Every structure is written in C-alpha cells, then in structure tokens.
Length: 163
Image (cartoon, rainbow, N blue to C red; front, side, top):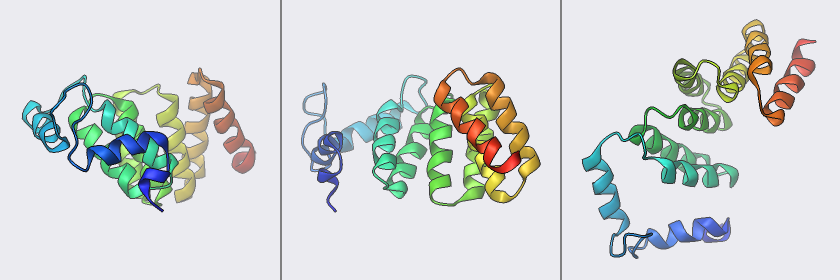
C-alpha cells in the first residue's frame, strides 16, 4: 500500500520527500532542513515534527518508520520524556522488549511520575513475565494518572492479569 493513501497528513510528508519546498520556509528542501537540524544539534524546542510523523506511522502500522522518526525526535530533543515513551511503544509493537524497556526506563528517569511511562514499562514487564513489577508499575500509574484513558488501561491490565 502506498504511504500517500494511508493518512492525509502523510501526503504532505510524501511530497516533501520528492524534493519540493517545505512548510513556512519556502525554498527549503527536506535535505536542507535535515542539515539545519544537524547543525543546531540537540534543541529543547525541536523534534516535534519527527514525533508527529512517527505517531502517524505508528497508527498506520508502519512501526519501522515510526521507530526511525521517534529516534530522530529523541536525538534532536532528549529532554522530552514523551518522545521516549512513543519510541518505547513502537518498539513494543515490534516485540523488541529490551529496546522498549530501555526507552521506557529512560523516560521514567526523566519524568518519574509520568503515567504513560509507568504504563508502558508495566506492559513491557508483563510481557517479560515479571508480573510482580508490572503490578507495582500499574498501581503507581493509577495513583498518578490524570487522564481517564490511561487509568482505564492500567485498571484493565491489573484486572486481567493480577486480580
């Protein structure tokens, strides 16, 4: 299936890949933007475009491409824990548990009360068979989860496997 048929937002990125101009910086090709990112180095306000594109690829089931975009987002902005959680989720979808665990632990070090990081690491531990640690992480997630969807996921995981 062609990427241009997956999601409307991906069409824009597919056009950019053919050397057309990009975004508000008329006349900048994707190659020029990549060189600019390299020259700037790590940047606390960067990486969001790569993360957005990674999310689009992730939801389209293109996990290899999602991982490469999330890795680029983390490389540009290593201070954003959410980028690392997204990377861990993509690795988890590909069943790369060791890499998923490393990314989730890195996000958790950066943001110890992040419900998303706690839930992701709990899922990794559960898949590895470490149910005791998974339960602890799910319970921590429940105590910190402000968002009802994350809370619901953690409660379902606890009920399903740890009742």
